[in-house]
Structure formats: C-alpha cells, structure tokens
Image 1: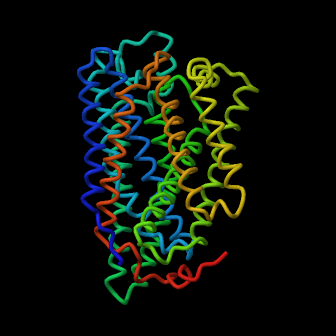
Image 2: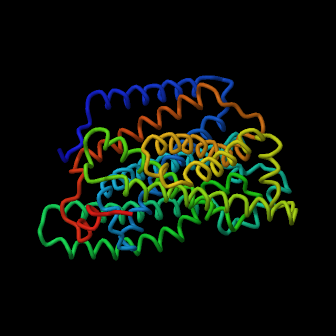
Image 3: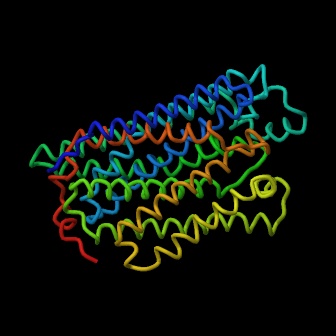
Amino acid sequence: MNYYTFSNRAKTTTYVLMGIGLLALIYGLFNGEITSTRFWANILLEGAFFTFISLGANFFMSLQYVAMAGWSVTVKRVYEAIGRFMPFGLIVIFLVLLSSVIKSGSSNDIVYHWMHKGTDKLYDELVAKKSMWLNIPFVLIRTLVIGAIWIYLVNVMRKRSIEMDLTNDYLPLHYKNLMTAAYYIVFFGITEQFVAWDWIMAIDANWHSTLFGWYLFDDMWLTGVIATVLLTIYLRRKGLLSNVNENHMHNLGLWMFALSVLWGYLWFFQFMFYWYTNIPDEVVYFQARIDHYRCLFWVMFCVNLLLPLIVLMTRDTKRNDKYLVIIGSILLVTHWIDAYVWIMPGSIGFEWHIGFYEIGLAFGFIGFFLYVVLSALAKVPVQVKNHPYLEESLHHHI
C-alpha cells in the first residue's frame, strides 16, 4: 500500500477542530472583554506559528537537495506535504497586517502600534529612525513579493518531484530541483530576516536585535523537523512508509536534538549579552517578558532546552517512536508558548489571558493545518519511486 487515504474519521477530526476554532473566533468577535488587539494578536500567533512550521519543512526539503542527502528520500513526501500549508499561513499573516493598516488612522487598538499615527512623541522619534524600512507600503509590498517568490519556488520543486515518479528520465528533473533549492536557500536565508523584522520584531518597534532573525530561523527549522517526525510516525502506524526504519528515525531524532541545542544557544546568547551590556533599547524586550510573563518565559526556556538535551542524548531514545512522539508533542506546545511570548507583550501589553478564545483558536488552526497537510499527502504516493539516492535511503544504516 503506497497511498495515504484521508479517511472519513481523520476528516471528521479536522472538521471538529476547525469547528472549535470557528466558535472561538465568533466568541472573540462578539465578546466585549476581548479587545481588537487581543483578537488579531492571537490570529497572528496561530498564523505565524503554523506558517513557520511549513517554512521550516520547506527549508529542510531544500537542504536535502543541496546536501545531496540520501537518507531522507524515504520521508521526502512527508516534509513536502507539511510545506503545502505555507500559502494559507501567509494569507493569515497578511490579513493581520491589513487589519492594523485599516485601523491605524482611528485607533491604537492594533497589533502593530508603530502604524498608529497618534502615538506619543518619544515613541514616534524611535520609530522614525526606522521609517525608511518600517513604513506601511514597504512592509506590505515586501510581504507580498517575498511570499509570492517563496510559493513559486516551492511549487516548482514540488511539481518536478512528482513528475520524477512519472518518467524514467528523472535525473534532469532532480538536478533542476537541486539548483532551484540552492536559489531558495539563499533567497530564504536573506528574506527570512526581513519577515522576522516585519512580522514579529515590529510589534516591539522600539526594540532592535541582530540575532532575533536567526533565532526565529532555528525555531522554524526545528518545528518543521518535529512535524516531520510526528507525521512520519503516524504514517508508519498506518502501515505506510515501510522502508522507513529506526535508522531514519535516528537521523530525524538527531535533527531534533541538534536544533533544540542550537535554539537554546541562540536564546541564551542574546539574553546573556543583553544582561551584561544593560543597554536600555535592548533590555526592554526581556524586561517586559520577565516581569509580566515570568512563568511562561522560564518554563518555555527550560523545557525547550533541557527536555531534548536530557532525553534525546542517548541513541536508544532517538530510535524509539514513543519517546519521539512525547518529546516532539511537548516541544510543539512549548514552542507555541515561545511564540506567544514573542507577540503578546508588545501587542496586548501586560494584562494577558489564555482562555477559551486562545485555546479554541489554537485547536482550529491545528485542524486547518492537518486538513491541508493530510489532503496534500493523499494526492501522491507516500513512497518515492524514482530518485538517484533512493537505494542509499533504502539501505540506510547507522
């Protein structure tokens, strides 16, 4: 059996989750206690979190091409499917930007406060220094152009990847994808920094960092790998991907471990330098989060670093599906908390809440994400037929 069947039970599960999300959206829209900023900030949170997962998967796919990696060919369709959510997530993020633009002239109850024309003089002076880059037309144009190029390059690679299984003359297609992947990695490496500034850092417009973009990049990469691990295990339990064995899972577990350590390094590196130098324009970011989001802030950091560092250190745990599912699921939750801590202090301020609206909206986006990914997975065989490194992947052993 080489095709994944998106069963009625699985579809019903995604519909139920999306239904919960729709109810939460209606609740947030008509509940007077939920401000406009809180409403849109949570939509940005979910849109960004799941978009970043798909971006991480697309980068991982491109990296496998450029590195000429053989071991990952058997799970190629998995990370390709995860990357299919990217266009939908980009639309959500663009809608949040538009909501702030539309309300910028009449209200400060928006996610991106730098867009508001009535902020105080000091704040205007800080934002004015960045106005050449941080202005409404330029931000919207960058988002549209960058997103369109990302989508185009990924679609081209996906189309050729499917065509490779339909012809015996597949080598030219593979090498074209290798070149496209190289272009994508260079372009993504540059433009990911731009969107980190525009979508996340701009929420705290009077703060700046040269490291945050790389920190965000690792978060994308890591969550994309975790999603690949969880979906691969799900398919194996369905009797698919029979050629994926504990050696392939070991490699994926290694990526989870390595990227978690890199995430911890980048987080602590930035934190330590800010603490040591104590420059007001920099420490304002951590000060707000430590003072008012203390529990989420420290729990997120300790779990995201220490859990994989301790548990995934050994060879056996990286080859054990049960450990990978538990660790991967926990890490997705704590990285969602990390995303919450990126967005909320600079948007809604210090009176934060995690209630039905936040949790229900998260469930809705989980259902939406799963529906898109599983639909993409069901359209093509889950096992690659033609690839120059297929035999290497089938006989992968470490």
